[in-house]
Image (cartoon, rainbow, N blue to C red):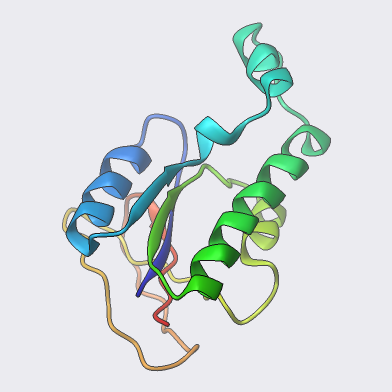
Amino acid sequence: MAVLIVMGVCGCGKSTVGKKLAAKLKCEFVDGDEWHSQENVEKMRRGIPLTDDDRTPWLRALYGVLVAWVEEGVGGVLACSALKHSYRGILMGRGPEIAPQENTGPEIAPQENTGPEIAPQENTGPEIAPQEN
């Protein structure tokens, strides 16, 4: 099963694309925004930007979701902004379980792969990181 991360800026359609992918793949969808702590939600509500320290526990919790999907051998789609390279590093766990790939555009189709190597593709839209188990 595929483990996918749909990334992009606020309002770009991550959740919409993620939900459609999850429905197509018949797997779980997780909206990363729903995993923020109450403290982070309050800061955002008051217009206070989150710091890296605010985001790190949130990203680690989302990484835990990805690891669980991999360990359980089930697929899943996560929508998450992860705009900084360091944030994506936390989500990827810097390990081989989840391989990054840019594979986006007007039509997004999951790709089958047989190993950890996935060639990047140049397109536009939200970022997606697939991995087949």
